[in-house]
Amino acid sequence: MSHAFSAPDRPLLGMGLRIVGATGFAIMAVLLKAASERGAATVELLFYRSAGALPLVFLWAAAGPGLASLRTHRPTAHLTRSAIGLATMFFTFGALSLLPLGEATTITYTAPIFSTILSAFILHERIGAYRWAAVIVGFAGMLLVVRPGGSDLPLLGVALAIASAFGNSAVMITLRQIGKTETTTAIVFWFTCGCTLVCAMLLPIFGHIHDATTYALLLSAGLFGGVAQISMTGSLRFAPVSVVVPLDYLQIIWATIFGWIIFASPPVAWTLAGAALIAGSGIYTAYREGRRGQEPAQGRAPPEC
Image 1: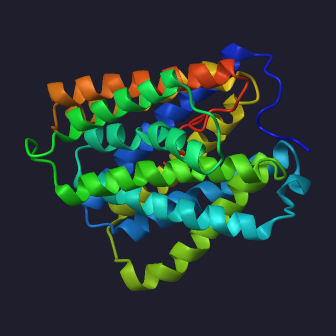
Image 2: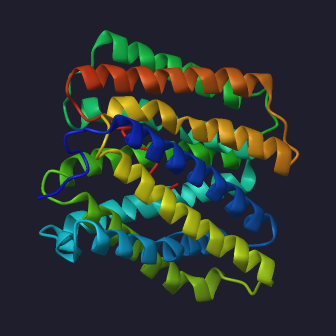
Image 3: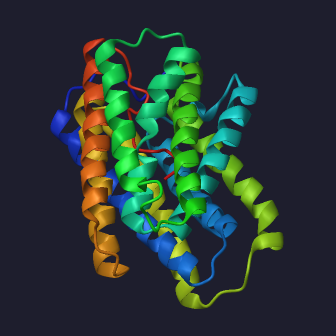
């Protein structure tokens, strides 16, 4: 059975793919935020993100491991993973609609913190003092970004971003469990199919008629998201998780730059300091887990982003 976490042999290619993935997700976020500011509902963002990526994921499967890799022996597990993932995407895109791009992206990257906690309580993994220290540092970074009582960020947007981070950590825990029997291709494909189907059913209720520019933004976001998803997954075939994880945090840098240039939302010193702590916490956690020969819970960028 083919898995994404095969023996690495081309680390530079893996790192290059990871950079493409992080950049693609950042561009996707810009396009979705622009569409939301033109009146697109969160359900519409979810639908076009999934529907636009579906053909690419199918072609990726056909050209790579083959359509046989889409077979599943655990459909119920895919349903559970898809339900958690869809809720996480809803939280992510909801936060993206309400918060500045840099802050929304930074907060959602606290997922490794929650992944470590869930790993301890659900998977009963032994978490050492250094990793707990990384969790504390990450939480401190999040508090710097949110600044309870001293920030003008919308409370609902902050709550959705934190919920997104928690949901993404739950997705990572689920992937650890079903990844033992299911191929990565099947996991990505069936999740994309599930999201597209559910959102298609909700579209007549929550969807709106838009102009050509808004539809172009939505469709482009789906394509960039699909390319980013495939690049992120493909990177793990050629480089260790601990090597590519630091490159995930390029998305925070891109989001900050794009938010400043495109949405006239300059970075705040508190956000930059918090982002540095969050990135440092996540990278250190990946390093520690890599030394233990374990796939980090945050071993890829948020799969729903």
